[in-house]
Image (tube, rainbow, N blue to C red; front, side, top):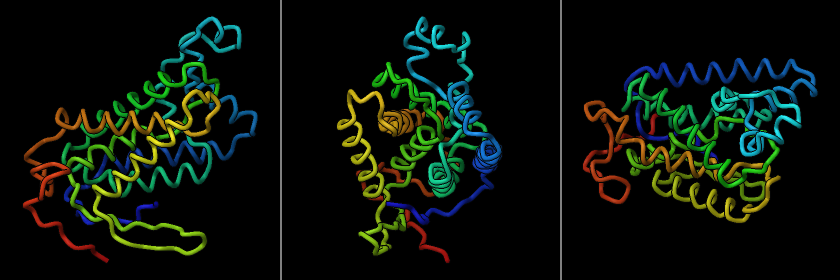
Length: 246
């Protein structure tokens, strides 16, 4: 499933979202100018290798410098390829502005980074011995999806699904779209348990999403909650959701 647009209009200029998008773009373009050996080094130094922090003695013997906690943040701005980068940035573009509307730019930035940390620590908990670097904004963006799940469950998400080679486009309630997304991450995470070499950090996605749900009450500003569902994801909204705009 790929989101194309949603029905919640933007109220304020999303300065934080635009800044995060710009930083990710700048870093990704910089990556494109690196040789493969340099990318390998960047990912291992500025990405997070779980075993580096789970087994410090091993990390020193493997040549990692002491410390490295800055990578807890820098890994969120690295991506493994064009597909990884574009899907993450598009998802942030679709859903992030409405969450920033509710929080304001500074609160949103702290919320985003905190969800990214929660996602990372969840992954490290489930894969402590992994030597594969964790890179990408997926965990932080999953936190944005968790907040969206609570705030706008009755919004409509225009969704693209490829059935073999046939593209299907239809509208789904955000509750359904994000519910399916969560179940896919959960099923994938359970199937990958014990596989330290898994290429996708499923548990980071789940940890980020749950962090977004739990942290939302600390960051939302009720006076800015223009289109929120007053009853949460499982109640009927009293506010009309505006139609899709071309």
